[in-house]
Image (cartoon, rainbow over the protein chains, first blue to last red):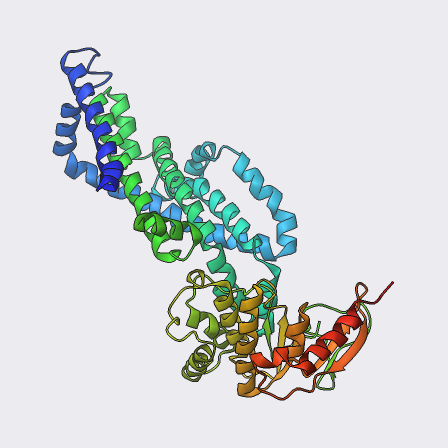
Length: 260
Length: 201
């Protein structure tokens, strides 16, 4: 019971108190509505625009998912190459780090010039932001393999592929999922920023339109949708994490804490 | 080196009249650490051997269950390694090394990290398992009593560089029992080995 209070009630309390203060301030006109509209106004607008906004949210979600999934596969694949193909590591590792140093968002306009303003450039910016943490963490996971495990598997006559699928990949999974939690939030940023650069739909597009017309309420509406979307995607990753690496020490720690 | 995982600095190793030039696969190995996979159950860890070798899964599972039962782990098949004590984990690792009926069993100080009493128990468990198929077993140990208890032949290596300095056949009947540890013959073997190791300078 006390656990429930500390984990649900307290954070909710903070939320409601802040909203109430905000509403109170708006009604007393402590700040102008075009800067900070009242929460009730925003809530009503969220409700009335829900069908249209839902459509925009779907577009953005698809961009994020596309970029994110691509980031997972390419991130893991590149990490695998870096870990096991020495020549690839020597030739490409510095360049992959260099790409990370580049402000990738700045590549957005170039992508628009190359492939237009459609779906693809947003997914690509999303991917560009998300893949690096996946690659680096997976690499760390693959490299933290103890030598004796490799000896054990070799004495069993395990092929290269089997060693990867049965041992190295599961061993790296906790690292990969830790990186996915970072990557999913970056993928959201990537898609939104991609839509800033040039789009005719999506939540980022709504933000740009709302800014152009000084429609502060609509900006907040878009922010509400983006936050909820981001939160849901993050929760989804956590769910997969729990499912796939329930055996890992960090998850066990949670179980012990939950039981206590 | 026997398993072909490390290359000797001098000389050559032959197994069954053939020089070892690449990793042997007709071996079962237990290392100092148990090297269990946290994401597999106890049974799954033993079955790893079958998965890597594409053995018949049903036959392998039956064998795995027999092995686990022999070392007192019946009922623990679906537990995860982290729920087990160090001695139990090492027993699982040895079951895994024995699953595929290899002709050679290599044990690299598998009980080194266990306390003395657990170690004595593990010796009994190991003997139990070994008597099933009686493979050629080679064990590295720092425990004299463990060496005498388990071996037909004890070979003493010197400090670095490791060279063979002494060899002692242990002529005790099998199965060996806990009581035999206190028998005069057993103590005499131990004494001989200790003298071979502690060479006065």
